[in-house]
Length: 112
Length: 111
Image 1 (cartoon, chains in turn purple, red):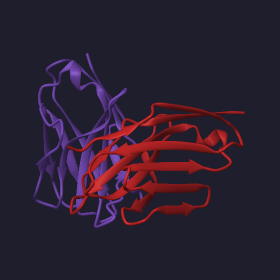
Image 2 (cartoon, rainbow over the protein chains, first blue to last red):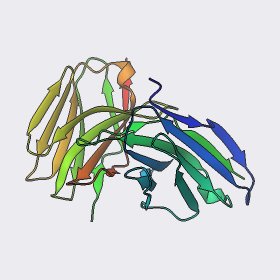
Image 3 (cartoon, rainbow over the protein chains, first blue to last red):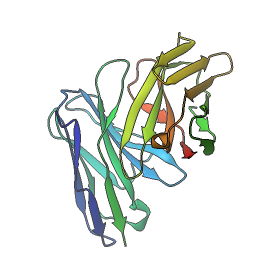
């Protein structure tokens, strides 16, 4: 089992460019999450999908969109990247209680 | 609202015990978790405790929960240099799978 995989690992964008971060899990989990991690801020939830076909906003959704493509895949899209979106992005998945979340290795994004 | 607080930094010597502390504000927390993040990597779940438990032990790790004071701690016995990492405390609320994370405690273990 690969667990949670994310692509790409690194990305540099110019302000205004768009891109999609990909996430896939092979654990047959129902719920998937996107977080961003910034120095001194911990992890903040951007969007989540409690089950296939549903998505909900988290703490910091502005500037992002998501798609739950199927049970395995959950993508995060930046339509018009801004320097404030420079961050490390983590995808995670979980199933039923006790809701242990399993994390991918992260995507390091720099917007110049 | 939900809030999880941790001290930012802890330094110990190899072989000592480390205690990382966390406080949370929401009394309806159902599960509390400890995650470890090594440099350049994602978060790895170390252990979790159900809110009706006081203590959980797993090899070198001991989790203590004081519900009255909303205080959670992680004790690492015989700390090794490989334990150097950032440790995150997190909580989930009853019926919800979303987690609220603290800002993380950086543990530095010196030889």
